[in-house]
Amino acid sequence: MTEQGPVAWPPAPIRTERLVLRQSEARDRTAFIELFASPEAGTYIGGPRPRDELERAVPELPGRRPGLFVTDLDGAMIGMVTLDRHDAGRPSHVRADAGKTELGYMFLPKAWGRGYAAEACAAALGWFADTSPGEPVVLCTQIANDRAMRLAAKLGFTEVERFEEYGAEQWLGVWSSVTPSG
Image (cartoon, rainbow, N blue to C red; front, side):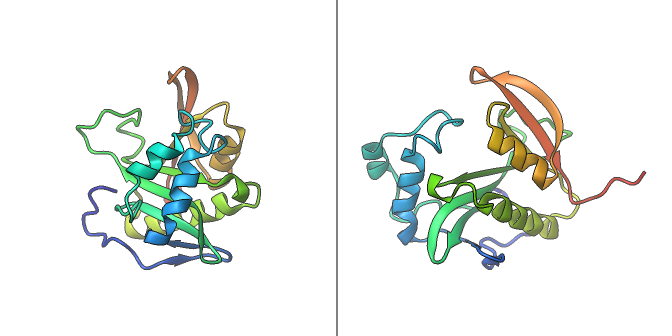
């Protein structure tokens, strides 16, 4: 959310049953490096980045930007959720009629399979619905990413289109807090 408009950033931490979504802190640096260096976490986003490169590139206070929530479990970062607003001049796969904000997430492999991504993404979408009522959110993932496809369905995203990008079939879905009247 590079342009927040009337939304103040960062928001107060968002608490769920098991997690806290919060702004990044210096203590998260090691987890950011571990996340972006992970072969498993990088499978569908172009692969892992070299750890030595990350050690040099990741700032002391990583991920400090509007739209990025650190997902915290018991005081430690286990992943992140992003809500990124696309400006009109930026090339993107996001269609104009699908929404200008895209949900993204990455979690450390040790946190996979426990429902943390669903819990964190649902909380971020709830926050977004409160701050930007009726504005749709998009999610894009590779069709081959079974976990992401299941999460998109669980969160209520509906398919808008499929397309080829980065040498793989991609899926674009949209979510809205507004229920269509019928």
